[in-house]
Every structure is written in C-alpha cells, then in structure tokens.
Amino acid sequence: MKILLVRLSSMGDLIHTLPAIEDLARQCPDVELHWLCEAGFSDIARLHPFVKKIHVMKWRQWRKHLFQAETWREIGRLKQVLRQEAFDFVLDSQGLIKSACFAKMAKSPIYGLDKNSAREGLAALAYAKTYAVPKGKNAVWRNRELFAQVFRYAMPETQVFGLTVPEAGRLKNLEQPYYAALHATSRDSKLWPVENWRALLQKLNEEQQCNVYLPWGNETEKTRAEQIADGLPFAIVCDKMNLLQAAYLLKHAVGIIGVDTGLLHLANALEKPVVGIYTDTDPIKTGVQVSAVAKNLGNIGQIPTADLVYQTLMDCVAADEGSKVV
Image (cartoon, rainbow, N blue to C red; front, side):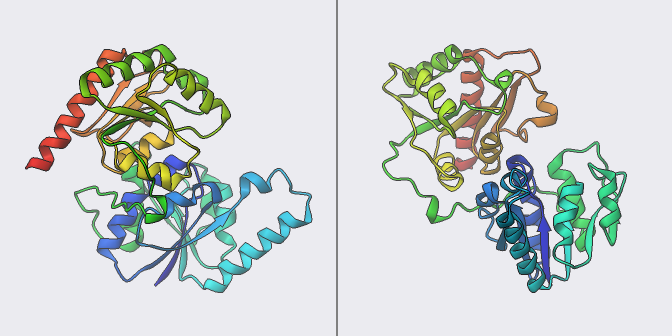
C-alpha cells in the first residue's frame, strides 16, 4: 500500500506528526509512506527512517509570484509527479483548505479529519473518508489517533518519536560536553531577556564547566546570539546551519534551553533534557511534551529567572543520566 501524507508546515506541526509515523511503522510496516511538505521543513521529514520519499511544495515562495509562468510550471511538475506515484490514498492530517488543495493534486482518494475536527471545517468537503478526533487533546495525541483510525489499529500506549539524525547532518569540531541555547523565536514578545541568558550561561559554565552553543537562523538572530555571547568565551555562536545540522547539535548536547520555537520541539522529539521558557504563550498549549527530562517554565506575562531555569535544567539532566544508569 502506497500512501501520501500531506502535512505541509510548520516545523512544530511536522515534529508533532512523527510519533504517529512511528506508530504506523510498528503497526503497518508494509506501508510505503511518502510525505508532501513545505520545502523549508523537508529536513524534519528526513529524520524518520520510515518515510520512503519526500515531495516538496514551495507555497511560501509561490504565493509571492503567482503571476509568473515559472511558478505555475513548478506547480504543474509537482502535480505530475504526485499523479505518477498512483497512491492508494492521500492522508491530509493538517485539515486546512490549503492542505486539501495540495492533496487533490495526487488525484487519489483523500482521507482526513471530519468537519468538526479539522482546523478549517470546509477542508472536509474534499475528503472521501473523514474521521472524528477530539479537538481538546494535544497535537501529538490527535495525530496518533487519526493514524490509528485510518489504518485500523489500536493506538499504542507508549509514545515514541523514533527519530534518526542522518549522517548528512554531522557537525565537526563540537567541543564536548556542551549545552545548546535556543534564544531565537518568531515574535519579540516570546524572547527571554539577553541579561537572563547571560546570567544562565555564566552559571552553567561556573557550575558545569561546559561550553554553550547558540544557533541562529537569520541576521537578526545572529546579532542577538552575539549580544548574549559578548565577552563570554565559553558561549559559542554557531555557523549557519540547516535543520539536519541543528538536529545533530541538539542530539549531542547534554541539555537544551529554549524559548517557544520549533527547534525546542525538535530537541524534545530527540528525547533530550529540555527546559522550555515561555513569556508570552501558554505552555499548556504550545509547550514541550512534559516528562522527567522535559519541563516548561513561565507563561503569558511570567518571565522565569535564570536561577530557576538553571535548577530545572539540572533536574532534567539528572533524570536523563539516571535513566541511562537503569
């Protein structure tokens, strides 16, 4: 059976789909799974070995050039490739009108959430089969439940992300052991103050004698990383990285601290010790999957202190080391 999964964006949404793919790999190993996603997030799909083939769309680029012939040529080529695959069906797990439109390109039956479960109920009109999945649950559970209904198996009790960082993401010359500080996010209101970052990094170095790496994605984020690292020789501003390289950095860190950003959820999916810092969003809705090694701090209008973040991180690291001993 050959299936196309449509989950286009964002980074967090793709990451929260991975446990459902792990369930599918264990319950239905003969399924040939393809994934259609936004080109900028295709490296997330590459982190799960069960995904046989990745198809990319470039909507973020295309929508800016809808009156250019090349845009429509690229869309036409994608449509041709998808139709040639002759999928048994398409699973649109995103539940948007946009995702339903791209799902229709494959010209195969589309399965998805019903009108009361989808984010945009009108998307359900495009589906040959629909499934009811309660909205009150978190994204990981909802994805796993949808897959379980579509492929007719009982959802496993244990949630596993099942990620593998490909060799293509390998980074050289990382100074072990180290921590990673995910300081950048999409909105200024979600940032943690520079002085808090500096206080945390200094305490990490004093108490743990470790370096701290600061990744970045654009020039504004790089400037912020440089401000945090200014005068702190143990704080290392990373070179520009792709998502696979970022995954490698996170996978080999002792622990990760981060604001509300996609990379924080990636660290969580890699089952690393993580502390999420929330200043303008509710961690109940957007936080990491809480466990002995993963905690959320703060909330809307509540800014956690550097000391609290440090102690919480040490608790997560200790829990991780304890589980390895067991």
